Image (tube, rainbow, N blue to C red; front, side, top):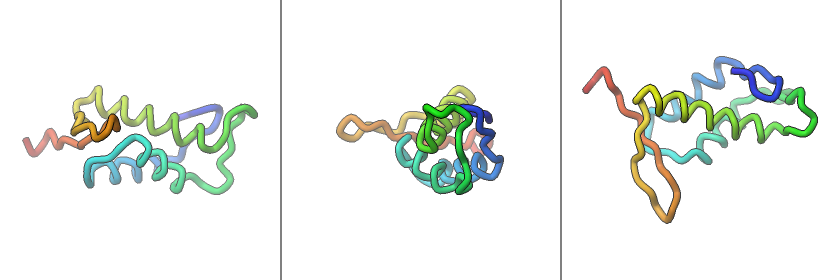
Length: 92
């Protein structure tokens, strides 16, 4: 997945997927996980973007992709914050 001219390594995407399968989560939680998994030298090609922008947009794209595939569903809203839950389609 390429964001702002930076190619996100596959281990970051795999780590985000593992996190999403564990328990209900918010997009902000996923952004934090992706930010921690990104290599220290991760810099976007676009000077106006930052490392945080990569993590934020990466989380957004992963949630969109998994939601459209039917693996993520809206779990609940707590004080206006959206929680997502992983649905194991193979087990159902």
